[in-house]
Image (tube, rainbow, N blue to C red; front, top):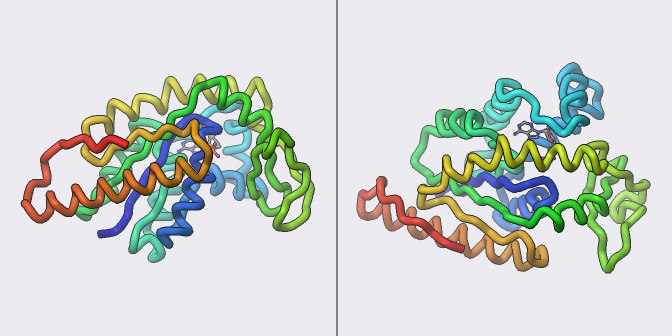
Length: 234
Ligand code: AMP
């Protein structure tokens, strides 16, 4: 059974860190729509120029544009054994489009990472990214890092991590992305994970929850019972 996973959660919840670690351990690609857009911005493509204006304001790029990007990405052969979508879907319209484009019977595992607002604001104020390779760093031992440990370039504050933009991103999250909880909430493959734990503990919780969902999915296939809406709790 292929591992098809989507992760959503507010900015600063740790989606990127967790998705990257999970992608490496399960050997499936991590597809971050934010990374794809930032790469387009850095390359100065037409898409990048269009996206930058929206991203710098803390808003979401259009459903049409992002759904097109994800559809194209999911058509590549490296997703054959699964994928982790990090930061997509972010609206109910995107979730509907994703359901429509998944034609096989592997369960879509949906992880919501929850973290209190005050922790998010604190994390984002310390977040730095490498201006060269794009690696992301958080504060460690109370120290905000300044140099990239993999390529030694200077670390910078992401344009959309400025305080006024962060507040807008949190507002947009509540308004446009939080409704995904109601959209996915009664699926057996929906899991809420407490993201306010040390990163390794979050990874362990996610891994246990994923294996639980896969095991329930396997049982359902064995019993020919695909419509059972059992909730798996983390
Ligand atoms: P992220 O790195 O996931 O925090 O995304 C950074 C920014 O990219 C977001 O604030 C949005 O402006 C844009 N973005 C990323 N993913 C999506 C998406 N699925 N839908 C709309 N906009 C997105």
